[in-house]
Image (cartoon, rainbow over all chains, first blue to last red; front, side, top):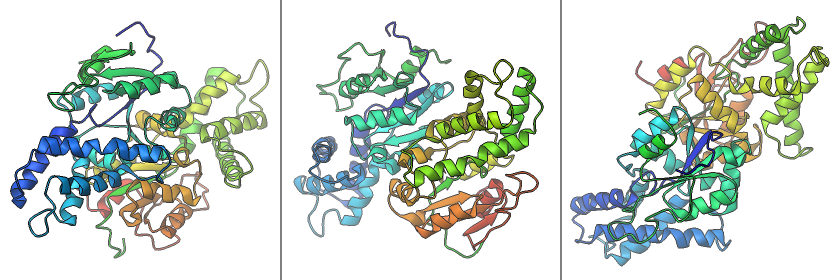
Amino acid sequence: MNATDLTGVTALLFDTYGTVVDWRSSVADEGRRLAREKNLPEIDWDAFADAWRAGYFPAMDRIRRGEQPWTTNDTLQRNRLDEIVEEFGLGDIGTGLTDEDKDEFNRVWHRLNPWPDSVAGLSRLKSKFTIGTLSNGSFFLLANMARHSGLPWDCILSADNFHHYKPDPEVYLGAVELFGGRAEKVMMVAAHNYDLKHARSFGMKTAFVARPTEYGPDQKTDLQAEERWDVITDSIENLADALGMDK
Amino acid sequence: MNATDLTGVTALLFDTYGTVVDWRSSVADEGRRLAREKNLPEIDWDAFADAWRAGYFPAMDRIRRGEQPWTTNDTLQRNRLDEIVEEFGLGDIGTGLTDEDKDEFNRVWHRLNPWPDSVAGLSRLKSKFTIGTLSNGSFFLLANMARHSGLPWDCILSADNFHHYKPDPEVYLGAVELFGGRAEKVMMVAAHNYDLKHARSFGMKTAFVARPTEYGPDQKTDLQAEERWDVITDSIENLADALGMDK
């Protein structure tokens, strides 16, 4: 933690996928359960989770470029699931996943499990700060995830609130406006350098929480802070320490 | 409670001023404290609270009619305070309220106290439903109020999220969209018949919580339900009972 003055910060907004919840193991574990239940062919469920997630950025980018009207992430993920079910050979009529199975499997993103430090860290931070999401996930999905995983958010902010996906400026500026218009009172917390870079460009404070296994053991990106963020740490518990919370 | 099927309801959205918090006594009590502290002339602080609140609807209506660009409620209330401080003779230079005093007094709306049944009722409802605000109050104000009063919201939705004030359709339709687009899964809870009327017109479920002293002992409006709302009751604890929550 460097010497930036953080005494004015009143709200902490968290990126969610990867920063607060471990999407990869949650999705792969649920895939394995589904495979047993439905007698699906044996596949690499970690690779399946990666492939599902990999469709996320191009789909959002099409919307960010205006090539497609606003579509919530829940729908983008459901569409992507259709593609990868075919790619992984899980869609055969009679022996594969039905549309109903896929609707249900898509809701795994509403049931992502937190990293081990997330709930305890957030609970400590909540005693002093207003804590919320600032995520590309659907609003409804984030509300369901909070209930599933016991994430004690004071509020939920989603790309849905702005009809823009991060890193469009509308998301960061919109969030700052909701918190009274003073960017320096709002801190973005993320495991991804790009997210913090955009947040900082609008005057928000920044905290990097390293999640070096978000993309599995061979992760290549975001292994460390790429700028001098206001806080640089490796768990939400340690973020609470850095911000002076009681244990 | 009539025989409407409410089994599909997953989210309850609450009007806040009057429905969850007792703005009138909160504002009047803080006015009396301020008067003692600043040696202000003796005035009727209940009437002052009523006058402050009375400016709220015309100010929002100007925005709803497009005569004024989007302005958050916090600012509308601050502007109204300037007017009534003069009307009540509290603005005299040297002996009255300074701009700084007024900025601070305006934040009383962030510190409104709940009705005696609100926190207990909401806590019970939260065990089954996603609970949130759907209020014309500023987002930031609602977040601060939740912390001040221990209101255990899962999420906060404000006119700020839509840049429209209730009863503009954008507010109800926007909230329903955020909850996945199925209006019948979302219930509006309010002490005001007009709010429920609009919510119902978009397919939302409705619960009326009578607050016959919101405007003081001589209240004339909203003393009772004016339509057969899905639930009709007189406290949030009793709403929890009506929706089958454990005690």
